[in-house]
Image 1: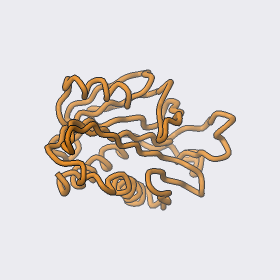
Image 2: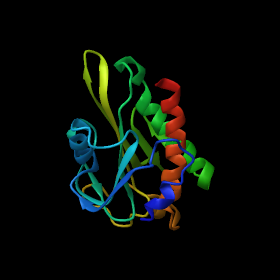
Image 3: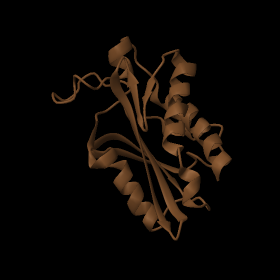
Length: 192
């Protein structure tokens, strides 16, 4: 992945610092470790080509093969927990708009955090925060998006899909990330 393209996004802080991994257990778990120790800049992004133990909501696993998007954004907002209400859905809507604007495809939001394409899961968003006395210590936004995946594991191939599988086209992941984080930064600026 050419992550330097992502760093050129029209953002002030999102994606300016990128940690890139060819293979990792989970960008979310690694981001949690970095955030706890405050070892990264606000708006840093962890990107992986492949996750071997990706996580979804409610502790479920999230499979990520190569040519997809597996990423986590690390934030240190100076805000109270209440501002996070509805954030995951806003992030899903931002991805829905991104795909519509870039390619003209209509993804469906399955509340609160999934996106479907032709009734199959294509994207999941996970938000997690650590707080102390209602004050946010850090916020993690993770996304798994099946972009160019062609082969799905047996137990999910009937319920999961990718842009490539549905359209027979290859997509530029960096373009999707760049446009999405521009929308995400606007959302974050409106609540923090």
